Image 1 (cartoon, rainbow, N blue to C red):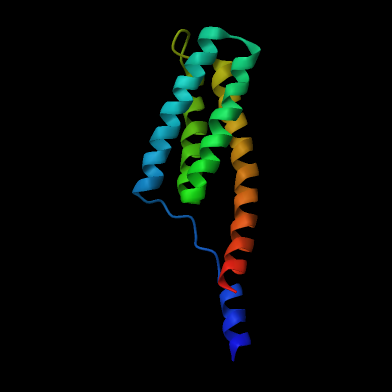
Image 2: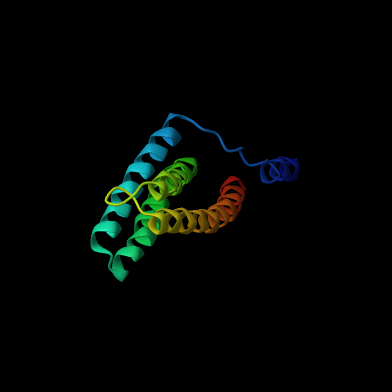
Length: 130
């Protein structure tokens, strides 16, 4: 009997992506953080400032996703979306290269972290429930 209940918990499907109030809040926070980061890059135009996108996406996303992975996804989605309108504004309020660089980098990091968290959450949830 215990084997059948064990098999049912392991085979349980993962919850689908759901947008709740927390996800919307983190989309807005990610959008604002991205905009501030792009303004920093635009003002300094130093090579090191382009690396700030990596640090301001990966570290906060992992910390947020440890609490709720959908909120982490929301942060990264907001961060990436902010690059699109920024690319259409003229300096000093925007820049074509910086906007699309932010969008592409954030999207790439989103895909990598999504694959890592998706795999890790599936394996962790099956281990925890056994």
